Image (cartoon, rainbow, N blue to C red; front, side, top):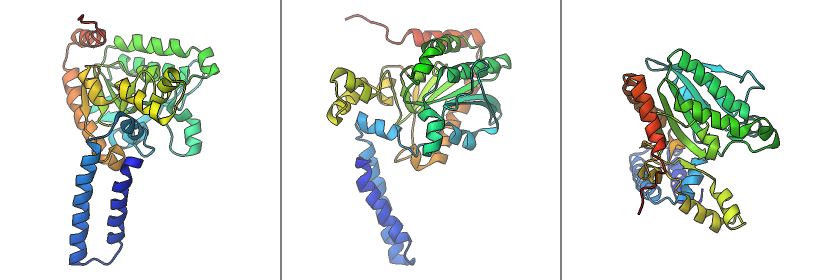
Length: 314
Protein backbone atom coordinates (compact mmCIF):
# COMPACT_ATOMS: atom_id res chain seq x y z
CA UNK A 1 0.00 0.00 0.00
CA UNK A 2 1.21 3.51 -0.83
CA UNK A 3 1.26 4.74 2.76
CA UNK A 4 3.49 1.79 3.72
CA UNK A 5 6.13 2.35 1.04
CA UNK A 6 8.57 4.22 3.29
CA UNK A 7 8.09 1.58 5.98
CA UNK A 8 8.71 -1.23 3.50
CA UNK A 9 11.95 0.45 2.43
CA UNK A 10 13.11 0.42 6.04
CA UNK A 11 12.17 -3.25 6.43
CA UNK A 12 14.15 -4.13 3.30
CA UNK A 13 17.16 -2.26 4.67
CA UNK A 14 16.93 -4.19 7.94
CA UNK A 15 16.67 -7.48 6.03
CA UNK A 16 19.74 -6.57 3.97
CA UNK A 17 21.75 -5.81 7.11
CA UNK A 18 20.60 -9.05 8.75
CA UNK A 19 21.87 -11.00 5.73
CA UNK A 20 25.42 -9.67 6.21
CA UNK A 21 27.97 -11.08 8.67
CA UNK A 22 27.14 -10.02 12.21
CA UNK A 23 29.41 -7.46 13.89
CA UNK A 24 28.99 -5.17 16.86
CA UNK A 25 28.69 -2.08 14.65
CA UNK A 26 26.19 -3.82 12.35
CA UNK A 27 24.03 -4.88 15.31
CA UNK A 28 24.01 -1.29 16.47
CA UNK A 29 23.04 -0.10 12.98
CA UNK A 30 20.20 -2.66 12.80
CA UNK A 31 18.93 -1.54 16.21
CA UNK A 32 18.84 2.07 15.02
CA UNK A 33 16.88 1.13 11.90
CA UNK A 34 14.44 -0.94 13.94
CA UNK A 35 13.89 1.95 16.32
CA UNK A 36 13.29 4.26 13.36
CA UNK A 37 10.87 1.77 11.82
CA UNK A 38 8.87 1.57 15.04
CA UNK A 39 8.66 5.35 15.35
CA UNK A 40 7.65 5.89 11.74
CA UNK A 41 5.15 3.03 11.76
CA UNK A 42 3.46 4.52 14.81
CA UNK A 43 3.41 7.96 13.18
CA UNK A 44 1.92 6.64 9.93
CA UNK A 45 -0.75 4.48 11.57
CA UNK A 46 -1.89 7.23 13.94
CA UNK A 47 -2.87 9.34 10.91
CA UNK A 48 -4.57 6.79 8.66
CA UNK A 49 -7.55 8.14 6.72
CA UNK A 50 -10.81 6.13 6.56
CA UNK A 51 -9.92 5.03 3.03
CA UNK A 52 -6.47 3.86 4.14
CA UNK A 53 -8.16 1.96 6.98
CA UNK A 54 -10.40 0.35 4.36
CA UNK A 55 -7.37 -0.79 2.38
CA UNK A 56 -5.80 -2.15 5.56
CA UNK A 57 -8.99 -4.01 6.49
CA UNK A 58 -8.80 -5.68 3.06
CA UNK A 59 -5.09 -6.52 3.27
CA UNK A 60 -4.63 -9.96 1.69
CA UNK A 61 -2.36 -11.12 4.50
CA UNK A 62 -4.76 -10.34 7.35
CA UNK A 63 -5.74 -13.49 9.26
CA UNK A 64 -9.12 -14.97 8.35
CA UNK A 65 -11.50 -17.16 10.35
CA UNK A 66 -9.63 -20.43 9.76
CA UNK A 67 -6.35 -18.77 10.75
CA UNK A 68 -7.85 -17.69 14.08
CA UNK A 69 -9.37 -21.14 14.51
CA UNK A 70 -5.95 -22.74 14.06
CA UNK A 71 -4.37 -20.34 16.56
CA UNK A 72 -7.12 -20.30 19.19
CA UNK A 73 -9.54 -23.22 18.97
CA UNK A 74 -8.67 -26.69 20.21
CA UNK A 75 -10.35 -29.76 18.73
CA UNK A 76 -12.15 -27.78 16.03
CA UNK A 77 -14.69 -29.83 14.08
CA UNK A 78 -16.04 -28.06 11.02
CA UNK A 79 -19.72 -28.60 10.25
CA UNK A 80 -21.11 -28.30 6.73
CA UNK A 81 -24.39 -27.72 4.91
CA UNK A 82 -27.70 -25.97 5.55
CA UNK A 83 -29.86 -29.14 5.16
CA UNK A 84 -31.83 -27.37 2.43
CA UNK A 85 -29.63 -26.66 -0.58
CA UNK A 86 -25.85 -27.04 -0.18
CA UNK A 87 -22.76 -26.10 1.76
CA UNK A 88 -21.38 -22.56 1.38
CA UNK A 89 -17.58 -22.34 1.78
CA UNK A 90 -17.81 -18.54 2.20
CA UNK A 91 -19.00 -19.14 5.77
CA UNK A 92 -17.11 -21.52 8.06
CA UNK A 93 -18.95 -23.08 10.99
CA UNK A 94 -17.98 -25.60 13.63
CA UNK A 95 -17.42 -26.51 17.27
CA UNK A 96 -14.32 -26.56 19.43
CA UNK A 97 -12.77 -25.32 22.67
CA UNK A 98 -11.54 -21.84 23.58
CA UNK A 99 -9.57 -22.47 26.74
CA UNK A 100 -12.01 -24.24 29.11
CA UNK A 101 -15.10 -23.23 27.13
CA UNK A 102 -16.78 -25.28 24.44
CA UNK A 103 -17.77 -22.79 21.73
CA UNK A 104 -19.46 -22.60 18.35
CA UNK A 105 -17.47 -20.71 15.72
CA UNK A 106 -19.05 -18.98 12.72
CA UNK A 107 -17.06 -16.76 10.39
CA UNK A 108 -16.48 -15.55 6.87
CA UNK A 109 -13.58 -17.01 4.89
CA UNK A 110 -12.31 -15.07 1.87
CA UNK A 111 -9.70 -17.50 0.58
CA UNK A 112 -5.98 -17.02 -0.03
CA UNK A 113 -4.97 -18.05 -3.55
CA UNK A 114 -7.05 -17.51 -6.68
CA UNK A 115 -8.59 -20.99 -6.68
CA UNK A 116 -9.58 -20.75 -3.01
CA UNK A 117 -10.97 -17.22 -3.41
CA UNK A 118 -13.22 -18.40 -6.22
CA UNK A 119 -14.35 -21.46 -4.25
CA UNK A 120 -15.17 -19.29 -1.24
CA UNK A 121 -16.65 -16.52 -3.40
CA UNK A 122 -14.32 -13.94 -1.82
CA UNK A 123 -16.17 -14.31 1.49
CA UNK A 124 -19.54 -13.30 0.01
CA UNK A 125 -22.04 -15.79 1.37
CA UNK A 126 -25.13 -17.18 -0.36
CA UNK A 127 -28.43 -17.81 1.47
CA UNK A 128 -27.33 -21.36 2.25
CA UNK A 129 -24.35 -19.89 4.11
CA UNK A 130 -26.60 -17.90 6.42
CA UNK A 131 -28.92 -20.86 6.86
CA UNK A 132 -25.94 -23.04 7.72
CA UNK A 133 -24.83 -20.44 10.26
CA UNK A 134 -28.30 -20.40 11.82
CA UNK A 135 -28.37 -24.20 11.97
CA UNK A 136 -25.14 -24.19 13.97
CA UNK A 137 -26.42 -21.38 16.21
CA UNK A 138 -29.54 -23.40 17.01
CA UNK A 139 -27.39 -26.48 17.64
CA UNK A 140 -25.24 -24.44 20.03
CA UNK A 141 -28.35 -23.13 21.78
CA UNK A 142 -29.64 -26.67 22.26
CA UNK A 143 -26.47 -27.66 24.11
CA UNK A 144 -25.97 -24.31 25.89
CA UNK A 145 -22.76 -23.56 23.98
CA UNK A 146 -21.74 -19.88 23.57
CA UNK A 147 -21.25 -18.56 20.05
CA UNK A 148 -18.32 -16.61 18.59
CA UNK A 149 -18.75 -14.99 15.16
CA UNK A 150 -16.01 -13.44 13.03
CA UNK A 151 -17.16 -10.94 10.42
CA UNK A 152 -15.06 -10.29 7.31
CA UNK A 153 -17.04 -9.84 4.10
CA UNK A 154 -17.57 -7.22 1.40
CA UNK A 155 -21.26 -8.15 1.66
CA UNK A 156 -23.70 -10.94 0.91
CA UNK A 157 -23.50 -12.26 -2.65
CA UNK A 158 -25.95 -10.29 -4.85
CA UNK A 159 -26.19 -12.80 -7.72
CA UNK A 160 -29.42 -13.94 -9.36
CA UNK A 161 -29.23 -17.42 -7.87
CA UNK A 162 -28.73 -16.04 -4.37
CA UNK A 163 -31.72 -13.73 -4.77
CA UNK A 164 -33.85 -16.58 -6.14
CA UNK A 165 -33.03 -18.67 -3.06
CA UNK A 166 -34.02 -15.89 -0.65
CA UNK A 167 -30.87 -13.94 0.23
CA UNK A 168 -32.64 -11.07 2.01
CA UNK A 169 -35.00 -13.44 3.83
CA UNK A 170 -32.14 -15.60 5.06
CA UNK A 171 -30.32 -12.58 6.49
CA UNK A 172 -33.50 -11.20 8.05
CA UNK A 173 -34.28 -14.52 9.72
CA UNK A 174 -30.73 -14.69 11.13
CA UNK A 175 -31.03 -11.19 12.59
CA UNK A 176 -34.34 -12.11 14.23
CA UNK A 177 -33.14 -15.46 15.57
CA UNK A 178 -29.82 -14.14 16.83
CA UNK A 179 -31.65 -11.48 18.82
CA UNK A 180 -33.29 -14.21 20.92
CA UNK A 181 -30.68 -16.99 21.12
CA UNK A 182 -30.56 -18.16 24.72
CA UNK A 183 -26.77 -18.40 24.85
CA UNK A 184 -24.04 -15.72 24.92
CA UNK A 185 -23.03 -14.38 21.49
CA UNK A 186 -19.80 -12.45 20.90
CA UNK A 187 -19.29 -10.77 17.51
CA UNK A 188 -15.89 -9.60 16.25
CA UNK A 189 -15.39 -7.66 13.02
CA UNK A 190 -11.91 -8.76 11.92
CA UNK A 191 -11.70 -7.12 8.50
CA UNK A 192 -14.61 -5.83 6.43
CA UNK A 193 -18.09 -5.63 7.87
CA UNK A 194 -20.13 -5.14 4.73
CA UNK A 195 -23.86 -4.34 4.92
CA UNK A 196 -26.39 -7.14 5.46
CA UNK A 197 -23.71 -9.70 4.65
CA UNK A 198 -22.11 -8.76 7.95
CA UNK A 199 -25.35 -8.32 9.92
CA UNK A 200 -26.42 -11.88 9.11
CA UNK A 201 -23.96 -13.11 11.76
CA UNK A 202 -23.45 -9.90 13.77
CA UNK A 203 -26.22 -9.63 16.37
CA UNK A 204 -24.71 -10.36 19.77
CA UNK A 205 -24.28 -9.44 23.41
CA UNK A 206 -20.87 -7.95 22.65
CA UNK A 207 -19.81 -6.50 19.30
CA UNK A 208 -16.10 -5.79 18.90
CA UNK A 209 -14.04 -4.43 16.03
CA UNK A 210 -10.36 -4.86 15.39
CA UNK A 211 -8.60 -1.49 15.39
CA UNK A 212 -8.16 -1.31 11.61
CA UNK A 213 -11.35 -3.05 10.54
CA UNK A 214 -14.35 -1.32 8.94
CA UNK A 215 -18.12 -1.74 9.33
CA UNK A 216 -20.55 -0.02 7.00
CA UNK A 217 -23.92 -0.17 5.26
CA UNK A 218 -22.13 0.03 1.88
CA UNK A 219 -18.58 -0.02 0.55
CA UNK A 220 -16.90 3.30 -0.33
CA UNK A 221 -16.85 2.23 -4.00
CA UNK A 222 -20.56 1.40 -3.95
CA UNK A 223 -21.39 4.67 -2.24
CA UNK A 224 -19.34 6.67 -4.76
CA UNK A 225 -20.96 4.93 -7.71
CA UNK A 226 -24.43 5.84 -6.38
CA UNK A 227 -23.76 9.43 -5.31
CA UNK A 228 -21.36 10.53 -8.02
CA UNK A 229 -21.95 7.88 -10.68
CA UNK A 230 -18.22 7.22 -10.63
CA UNK A 231 -15.82 5.14 -8.60
CA UNK A 232 -12.87 7.46 -9.18
CA UNK A 233 -10.32 7.58 -6.34
CA UNK A 234 -11.28 11.09 -5.18
CA UNK A 235 -14.95 10.12 -4.87
CA UNK A 236 -14.19 6.81 -3.20
CA UNK A 237 -11.98 8.50 -0.61
CA UNK A 238 -14.66 11.13 0.04
CA UNK A 239 -17.28 8.42 0.45
CA UNK A 240 -15.06 6.56 2.93
CA UNK A 241 -14.50 9.77 4.90
CA UNK A 242 -18.26 10.36 5.23
CA UNK A 243 -19.56 6.84 5.82
CA UNK A 244 -18.34 6.68 9.41
CA UNK A 245 -16.97 3.18 8.87
CA UNK A 246 -13.96 3.16 11.20
CA UNK A 247 -13.93 1.44 14.58
CA UNK A 248 -13.28 4.73 16.38
CA UNK A 249 -16.31 6.41 14.82
CA UNK A 250 -18.59 3.44 15.45
CA UNK A 251 -17.53 3.27 19.09
CA UNK A 252 -18.32 6.99 19.48
CA UNK A 253 -21.76 6.31 17.97
CA UNK A 254 -22.24 3.41 20.42
CA UNK A 255 -22.79 0.96 17.57
CA UNK A 256 -20.06 -1.35 18.87
CA UNK A 257 -18.92 -2.17 22.40
CA UNK A 258 -15.14 -1.88 22.13
CA UNK A 259 -12.08 -1.82 19.87
CA UNK A 260 -9.47 -4.58 20.03
CA UNK A 261 -5.99 -3.10 19.46
CA UNK A 262 -3.94 -4.54 16.61
CA UNK A 263 -0.19 -5.15 16.58
CA UNK A 264 1.82 -2.17 15.35
CA UNK A 265 1.45 -2.13 11.57
CA UNK A 266 -1.78 -4.13 11.51
CA UNK A 267 -3.01 -7.63 12.34
CA UNK A 268 -1.22 -9.07 9.29
CA UNK A 269 2.13 -8.20 10.87
CA UNK A 270 1.69 -10.50 13.87
CA UNK A 271 -1.08 -13.11 13.72
CA UNK A 272 -0.11 -14.64 17.07
CA UNK A 273 -0.27 -11.34 18.96
CA UNK A 274 -3.63 -10.47 17.40
CA UNK A 275 -5.01 -13.89 18.27
CA UNK A 276 -3.74 -13.58 21.84
CA UNK A 277 -5.49 -10.22 22.24
CA UNK A 278 -8.75 -11.68 20.95
CA UNK A 279 -8.50 -14.75 23.17
CA UNK A 280 -7.90 -12.72 26.31
CA UNK A 281 -10.92 -10.52 25.62
CA UNK A 282 -13.18 -13.39 24.54
CA UNK A 283 -12.40 -15.41 27.67
CA UNK A 284 -13.07 -12.43 29.94
CA UNK A 285 -16.38 -11.69 28.23
CA UNK A 286 -17.47 -15.33 28.24
CA UNK A 287 -16.90 -15.53 31.99
CA UNK A 288 -19.08 -12.44 32.46
CA UNK A 289 -21.84 -13.38 30.03
CA UNK A 290 -22.13 -17.01 31.11
CA UNK A 291 -22.59 -15.92 34.72
CA UNK A 292 -25.59 -13.76 33.81
CA UNK A 293 -29.22 -14.81 34.11
CA UNK A 294 -30.43 -15.65 30.59
CA UNK A 295 -33.40 -13.25 30.71
CA UNK A 296 -31.09 -10.43 31.78
CA UNK A 297 -28.72 -11.35 28.95
CA UNK A 298 -31.51 -11.28 26.37
CA UNK A 299 -32.89 -7.98 27.64
CA UNK A 300 -29.45 -6.42 27.41
CA UNK A 301 -29.00 -7.67 23.85
CA UNK A 302 -32.44 -6.39 22.84
CA UNK A 303 -31.94 -2.99 24.47
CA UNK A 304 -28.51 -2.59 22.86
CA UNK A 305 -29.81 -2.91 19.31
CA UNK A 306 -33.07 -1.03 19.93
CA UNK A 307 -31.05 1.96 21.14
CA UNK A 308 -29.08 2.21 17.90
CA UNK A 309 -30.13 5.14 15.74
CA UNK A 310 -32.61 6.54 18.23
CA UNK A 311 -33.59 10.11 17.35
CA UNK A 312 -32.90 12.29 20.38
CA UNK A 313 -34.40 15.52 19.00
CA UNK A 314 -32.76 18.90 18.55
